[in-house]
Length: 421
Image 1 (cartoon, rainbow, N blue to C red):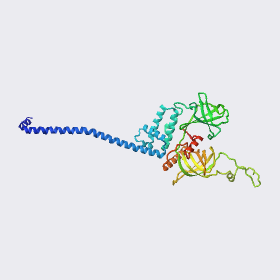
Image 2 (cartoon, helix red, strand yellow):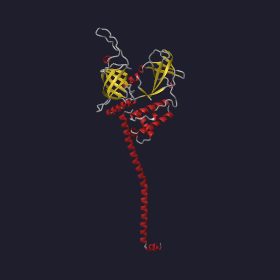
Image 3 (cartoon, helix red, strand yellow):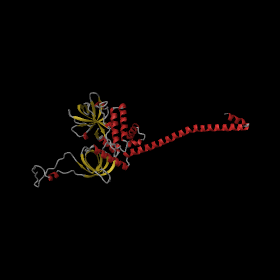
Image 4 (cartoon, rainbow, N blue to C red):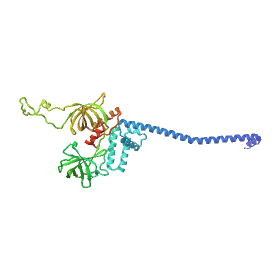
């Protein structure tokens, strides 16, 4: 320390001033470095956040585009897209497009969505949502049935016929008749004691006869058995039922196709013409029957046809075959379009609607002999055809239609094909 003092005292006044200036300049430069660092750091942090935000926005746009592309590919309606986005938000996925390939995430989001619906909505609304989610899951190609898809019609409030609102349409069918013979009626009164409906057309009433009543609610169908207490013209008073069966009104992707087919009228019974021998007499009956005799019974007469629309178990068939609503037909058609390993489908169908055309008839047919795996195969074929053609979904009832006007006619004639939960 004393050495430094000796050196300092040995300096001239000019040298001391110059040394002081150099010391001041060093301190100022240090302060500027600190100031620049403090100022630049927040700017760098803000820049980092901005870059991250822009990247997040771009990734979100890419995910939204992929989501829209995938939704178009499998033919999702606008409502199905909104439901799927709700599933995404509750599944914890960061990218919405990932839902199309992550079955666990879909089930997780769907389960939470149903829990919310049970807490805030009615049982009927929840069952409708459950049906829509089940069909949406099927469209995504997920096969295994999750636990949330099992209906809970009796929890927390059991369904009964007293819950059908006044003014709603119901369809009544005598249990001795086919479903195609249903009679439309309107609920005009519903109290704790009785259900009063007004028939659209007059009908013969037999007391004690059981009727099957169906009420279409959104994507669901209520079914229950009832009987007539009294009637006055077109007004029927019916018994209530606490045993309401809930089924899902299936909705299938409707796709325009062009598949070669064969179709034949296939009634349950038909009358054989009498056999006449060469003398003009009826031959005596013999025990048993030969092959020739059985051939004489006749085989179904197929006519060439074209399947123009595919909608799950529903077909739109163009054919020169005059049939009526409720008739049974045999249908054979090619499932794939020009594939190397093509296959054909053979099944019994129920005619749901028919309309005369220039070249014959346009027939809406519902295949009725299918298993769940058969329906899945038809759905996959429709999805494949839709992806190839780049078409979008038109909501339907499983019977197919050539236009929106015709679809309205069919829904009026037969509201929907149903399948139990």
